[in-house]
Length: 257
Image (cartoon, rainbow, N blue to C red; front, side, top):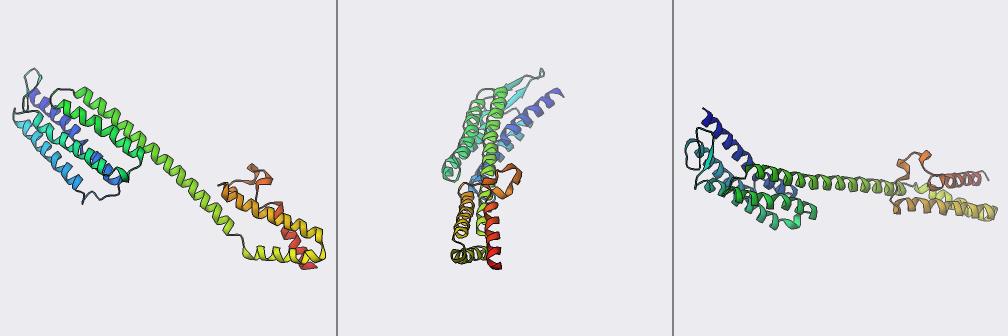
């Protein structure tokens, strides 16, 4: 009974290691925007994985690849590299697929996949001839965590830039949303003030140019002033401040006159 349990443990250890072969293939195709169902890369890797799975299943009922003694001692046979060979080939296929798709990936993603694929391929190759199960799982775990860290950090940076771009677009929309009749009324007010009150016309012209400058500066500086509370912003930085109020009051005075 103990021999059967030991063989089951060995089988699931090998199966767990083999599952790590098609996983990077799926991730690679996902980040390259390719369909898994129609990908020759995925079909090739899955075919190699199925061959390994079939060979490992045969090893459960035969002593072709390994032998478990009554003392629960695991003894490798000379045929053990055979079920490991499809996994090694699958990893090389992944590396070739990564190289062919390198232009579709960012530098960080390319480095992340290489950090996982290259060491894992080396570990599998060595494990086919030498028993290094503890080093295999620990090394692969470190490589997988490193790859995940790079990918997740890149996603965070991408989301940050995306949010900043959205804020910039909102600031641009705010400038474009300046009502045309406001500009028209301001220009007409300046026109009439030039005849009635030259000093007032100069002041309104200065306020109007300051108002426009602050609006366009808000976009150029990539700051979304309106998304913040006015209490956190100095009054001199607000595009919609005393300058616009002066313009409005001057327009009203002109209409009264």
